[in-house]
Length: 177
Image (cartoon, rainbow, N blue to C red; front, side, top):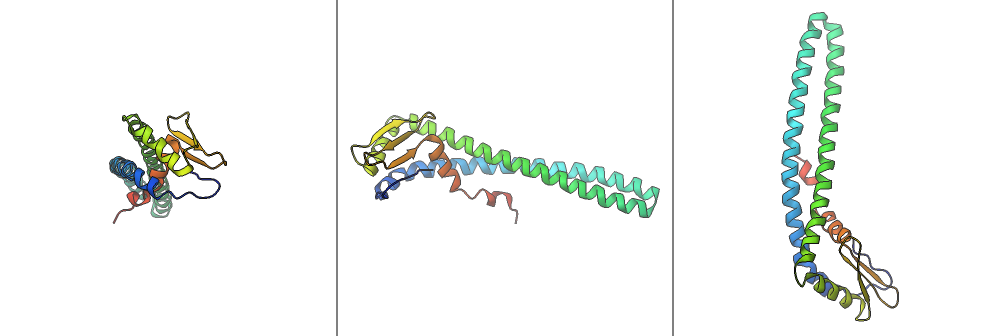
């Protein structure tokens, strides 16, 4: 996430300059997230169907052993099946979220490799903090800038990608209507 310390500079021009980057990141991350969610939902549905078949077989066997014993087992098996299905869905959602974050970081790296983009980002940082700001690369391939009075902007790959992903409503991908 981009962080500003000290007095808040006017970032309207800077924000406007980054809008195409953020829009591209959001669009790409959204497309990838939607595909991952579709795959996770299909996998979750298949897992639930498999579990239901297993539970149905267990129910038939339990019915043969007696109604009282059978209904207790059915309830336990169904509860266990629901827990397993929920666990699989949560794992798939977590994997999808991480994949979106990874894809966003990769997209930022690729955009910063486009001729002129890194220089434009450096210019945006200097515009925000002043021409005397020290702009230097970050270990992950982004940039950071520090002004003479200690104000700082983090435009690392992680910060830029994190900000873009945080603006996505990934939770909406998990809900069904």
